[in-house]
Image (cartoon, rainbow, N blue to C red):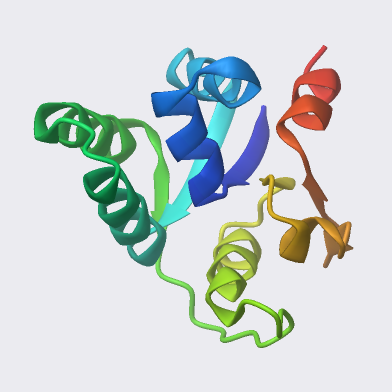
Length: 132
């Protein structure tokens, strides 16, 4: 089973819009992908979903599923590779700490790197193709 870090935009799009990010979330819920996440990423997801006025019950349900089904890591390394949006470095840190196979994102700041430490940085579409 692939281990993946999902960028906040994948969670937000998957919950509010569905589409390909929604398919990624469904595969995680069904146990086809092992989610690697950090508390910092969880906090960002909650903040963004609150700002988008996603019902608190839905956010709490997502948090419960993450706690139940994901590997929650506490990255011990700090990376400053992404200069344009330094807050995106948390996804790299999480992926390295959790020994992920992929980082799934729609963020150009991350996608332009393509890979770090053998961890591929790919779009939701490419992740779905890799799972076929």
